Length: 256
Image (cartoon, rainbow, N blue to C red; front, side, top):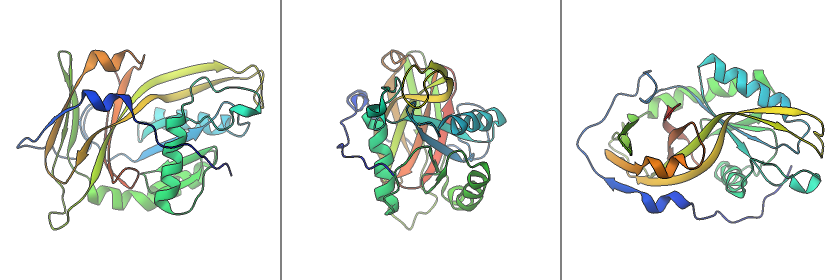
């Protein structure tokens, strides 16, 4: 198990957010690209320097092809000392993984680690464990789902979040924006995976908290051209309890 010792960085996109409350929301049932979905959310923490990771990267690709999940791949940087600097890694992603371990109170940080619906973790190369974790967490996830939608209006990315389905509580949540590259092949020249060409799927190129949600309907607006400079194909929006608690809504825009 690898322990991380970095502080959570201030993320660059927060400064461009303009958030306003609005008086409408959207249903959270299965829908087309850009609308809310109740699909499970899986986040794979992987590394080019980890020789047990390629099978997990491949499984993630297969799950994405099934179109039954919303999937994200985060490359962590804490194995860079083994002889190969991960070309997709960021300390922000390592920090997110550590924050999950703190939120779960289990201290478990390793690769390949797959986090399901923000509340459970399994070894990312164990398909049966992934299926079991989805089954165990999805009922609670579906019960919390609120409306969430993302779409573009000219140069503006619009994100609409609905109200809490539990009006008697006072929830506190974070809206995260992940900028996603669909497919990145990497020729690894040194380290534990030397000589391999590994393809990474739904690679997160940047992750930012773009708004705080208090259970009320809200809208966020972002300048799309600022987001596109990261070289991503599209984005995924997560609405998550606290910062790294259970995920209560998710939506993806697969292409700009």
